Each structure stands twice: as structure tokens, then as C-alpha cells.
Image (cartoon, rainbow over all chains, first blue to last red; front, top):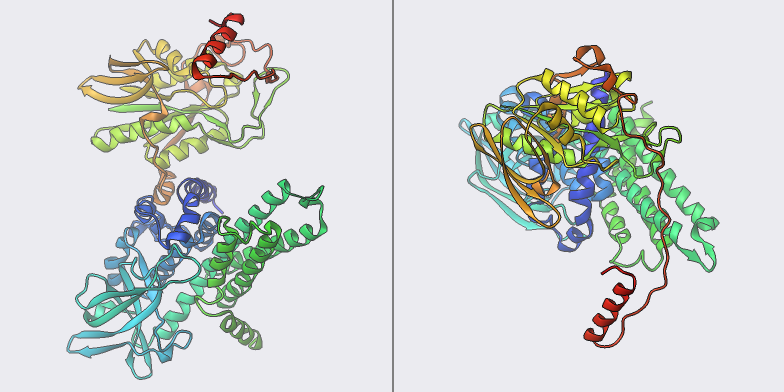
Length: 373
Length: 263
């Protein structure tokens, strides 16, 4: 690695840690309770340039690579997972425009990604993990496409201004179009009342006869499945990073508490039951970290990374829930209280056993990849 | 307009030790960060740069090679270039010897209209280097500025915030100003500016790059002799509660203070 690259990464993480400590962590508890980011929170995040971390410099971004981008989300998630997940949803969408967008589409959209949040929307009431079950359509009318449909459970839905939407362009053909919240026919629906990651808005968009030119097509007609899979892969690496950050948070709370608390006259740090839990938490955290970093390294090197990304998310999500359960047990009554963050960290981590593909689907993908070796 | 901001890299931790020979802070092996007050000085310079087109901001520091990290951070905040003064001959300098080398470097940079400092460094807390540089440069100085504006083509007006009073001072440029943290909230370096900062010039000047009187350098050129540095033992005394009505309690307090000859 060139010295300047290493120095830039060090300076970036120093800034991210400073920002997280001063601007994000203080709101971790309140945004869970309020189910929203605080007023001005996203604007400040945007102004400080977080939206453009992985955006190439030619589009006005910082141009950091996949490994650093994931590490940034790891560090942010130590303070608050919702903030990291909102950035994850934005970054995975930018990634698909970089991979599949025409130069003209990239030039039109990506410079605005420094200031506007992007989102990728696949799920519908009729289909989540089964994309062929969706009913949204894009129908060609003359030189244009007319998009109709209803997308739900979109990470950043309602917050994002630009949406990549998976639609059917033929009964068995999936394609992706880019739509904007300012287009006639675009409206927001309800926001989900999820139990975890409550700062991150997850919501619905309604597309009622949105007319777009052909240049809003991402990739080619019929590329929808491939682009959707790619978005999942990119998101899963970043989720592994977020989960690592959650576990680091859980571990810190647990060790800080254990260092101060006694059971009878015995410090918790001298009890084998505590050792067992803390050691397991540390191993879960470290294995997840290695998995997401491995997947990010493969991505940076241009190698296939789908299986490793699935491992990072499948392993990391259960690991973070289990580590949270151990943290709760170490803190006992305090762990079970809403006045302490452990219980919401468990709820945050639990979301990632479902989002971006269930852990069951991850395991199928991993097993199928192994069968082909 | 050229603004030079002088900054210092300080230990990241409060857990520092004292060198048993020099009685100075032992900074060896400690990770460094930019002195927090110096970020206020950089922010002031950048605000002036944001408000007009002709401002060039140069950062200046003296120390080992790793002090370049703080220069780079300041350049990522938006400063145009950095100058590191690094040479074994500068090592062990007290505030006077440091101020001398900084002043010589400011002269070499040339045409500086405003030389800014944070009010003091958080490791040694002297607040002396800014005034020393002003004296070496024969320039007016304003310390502890909590407010500053360019009030004329060649003039700066600053509100000086002291413990029990405020002063408004006007100085002709070029001038040296040290700033308080009340002045502003330093910006974060953006990720993009972090990357772009590595395209900005960062120059290292050694002993031979400057016009220096060797007798003023390093430990030999430092009149300060630190004989002992220690953390005073906290003195524990019995507490005497004040009782009765507020008036009675006040009388007891006055009596107690008089007995101890404190009033």
C-alpha cells in the first residue's frame, strides 16, 4: 500500500472516530426511542462528506476503496448502528450505478450522490427474497417507459431522494430503473415501525405512472436479477462491518461493567462465567471482522466475493445477537433495562438476520457455492 | 493575504511521564494529535479564506517527522500548504528557542499578514510561544482573542477575553494573534479533502534551510531550566460544616477565612 494511501486512511478513521464520538454516539439512545435521526443530523453527516466516501473523485467523492469504506461503517456502528446502516443503503446503491450505469447516467446522477441519499428497492408485499414474485412493472410506451408499482421496506425509504427500483419489463424479465422523488407520480407511503435500527427510516414508495426515458435503465433489460444480487453482495459486506461495530459496542459495555461490578466480594472479572461470555463475544466479533474484511479485500481485488459476503452477514448477525445476549446477562438487570443500550443493540443486530437476504438464504447460497467446488 | 497558522502536536493521552534527565515531558513512543486549541486558529484562518478569494493559509510546526500528521490534518481541513521544521539541532527547545525558530521560518515563508496560534498547548500549557514569535518579528500581538475580524485593509480588530474582563484591541497588520476556543467550532476534515490534502505541498525545512543563530537553538539555546516536575499530593483537611441560617453561616465563613488570614 502506498504511504500516502495508508496515511489518508489513518486520517480518515481518526476523523470518523472523532465525529462518531462527538456527533453520533450521544444520540444512540435517543434515536432508538424517537425512531428517527435528530433534527439536522443527516444534514451534518452530509455536509461533512460522509455520503461521498466511496464515490470516485471524478464524481466529487473521496474515492476510498471497499475495505476502508467497510471499516468506516464498522467504526461508526460502535457509536450507532442506524447511522451506519443508512450509509450502507446509500453506498450499495451507488455501487450498482458504478457497476451497471452508462457513463451518461453516472455523470447525471453520481455527482449528486455527495448531497443526496440513494436507495435500492426490491421488496414488495408479494415478494422479498423471491424477486420474481414482484408485481411492479415498467411498460414501454413509445420512446419512454412507464413505471407502476409499490415498493416496501426500503432502507432509507422516505429519506432518500433517488431510488433504484426493481421492476418487471416482461413477465419473466427483471430490470432496474432509476427514479427520483421529484418525478410526477412518485410518492412516499408508510414508514415501518421496526423493533431495531430505529434511527434508520425504512419505508414505502408508490410509483403511479412515472414516465422515464430509456437512459434511466440501469444495465440492460433483463439485468435486474444480476443487479439485485450484486446489491445484496455489496450490502452484506457492509453489514458484516456494521455487525462488528455492534459487537465492539456490546463488548465494551460488558467489560466496562465487569471491571466495576462485584458479585458478593468477587469482581466479575474474576469469575469464570464472565470469562466464558467475554471470550465468546470477542471471538464472535473477531471472526465477523475477518469475514467482512476478507470479502472487502476480494471485492477490491476484483475477485468473486459473493460467498464471503454472505458468510460475513450470516455469521455476523447471529454472532451479534448472541453477543448481545451475553452482554445482557453480564449486566443482568441493567442489561434488561431500556435505560441501558444493550437491549437495543440486540434488536439492531436482529434486523440483519433478515435484511439483505435472510440467514437461511445466506446458508443456501454458501452451501451451493461449496457444492460447486 | 497570507495567513500562517503555527500548530503543535501533543500527546494523545494524559498518561505522560517526565524525562528524569531533562525534566521535560517524555513524548517518546506516544501517539500524537494536533493541539485542540490550534484547530480554532486554523478554523479562523479558513473562515477568512472562505470569505475572500485572496487568502492563502500556510501551516507551520516544529518537531519530529511524525508532526507532519497534524500538518496533513490541517491541510485536510482546508489549509493550502504545510511546513515542518525538523532537525536534531532543534530538539530540546524551550518556548524561547522554539519561538526563535518559528519566527525565522515565518520570515522565510515571507509576506505573512497574520500569524495565528491557539491560545496554548494542552501538554505544557505555557501560552508563551505566540508572544515570543511576535517579539522576534517585532509585530503587534493580541493574545486570547475570542473574536476577530479584518476591520480595514491593513488592520485587525479582536476581542480579548480575559478572566475578569474583555478588551477590544485593534492592531496593524502584520500581527500575531492567539485565539481562544470560544472563537469558533473547528470543522471536520471531509473524506474528500483528506484525499486531496495529499496533493498539497508539505515541505520540511532543516537547520540549513533557515537563517539561524546556532546559539539560540535546542537545549543549549533554552534558558529555561526545569529543576523538578511533580504532581502535588492532594492535601486532605477536615471539613467544617456551616450551620444555622444563611446569615449565621455567612458569619461563620467570614470568621473562618479571617482566622486563616485569607481575607
